[in-house]
Length: 106
Image 1 (spheres, rainbow, N blue to C red):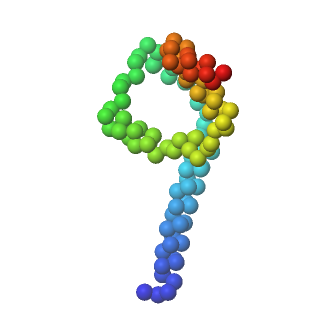
Image 2 (cartoon, rainbow, N blue to C red):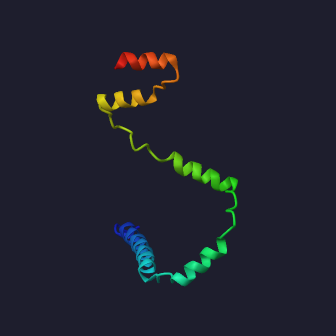
């Protein structure tokens, strides 16, 4: 094995990847807009029809995709004022115990 065979193989691999990306970009750029007449036909075809339920496999894939999402609030901190507002909004006036808490906070 020569010293430059691995870099050449890597270069060929990267060239192939770049060609695939370029093909994807060309496809997106060359895509024609859908005429309004066609959109209206597609819309009419689905009017009054109910979407079929998701298959078990599709639901599983959705679950896996959603489980990888990190909460947008992760690592953020709420101010003391904001936490007090949330606390007050959670207190229900119909519950006597909570009504007493609310009166004690004010």
